[in-house]
Image 1 (tube, rainbow, N blue to C red):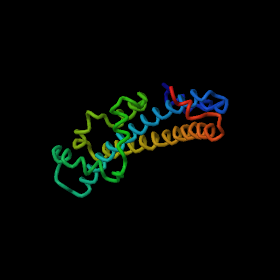
Image 2 (image 1 turned 135 degrees about the vertical axis):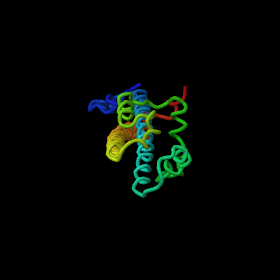
Image 3 (image 1 turned 45 degrees about the vertical axis):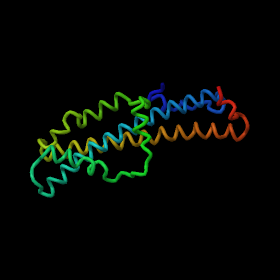
Image 4 (image 1 turned 180 degrees about the vertical axis):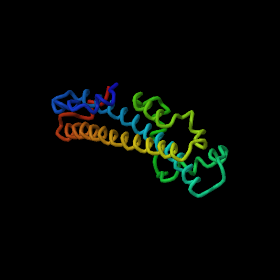
Length: 178
């Protein structure tokens, strides 16, 4: 299975037009796995950022002190803010099935920004620490999002090559059958 650096390497698509169709499909499938891992990490980062921003907003509004049970009770509201509920839940199904590839280096960077084990401690952070965590999570999310878009461009090139081959007759649906 390909890693993020491999999929984003400048030579990943070199010679694409001359590859056997099996290689095109395999590279596309590998890139999709990498993209799914990036999407997963981006969503986890966004969820953590939403929680931090909720706490920042609670403090700005002067609402009563920290209450973990209130936070837990409001998680559906906090995490759903800005989410399009029309999606088909593909990410959840893919991750649950064990598909997708999470880059361990990126996962470590996410944990460094705000460890999952420290989410309940955000009430103890002072305003400066909370702002630093918010900035770190925001920067991480933007970086992962940019990498994901680059991987999506690779997937698009591979998919376009497959479509071109089917349209030109170089490949047929019969080649999909075992």
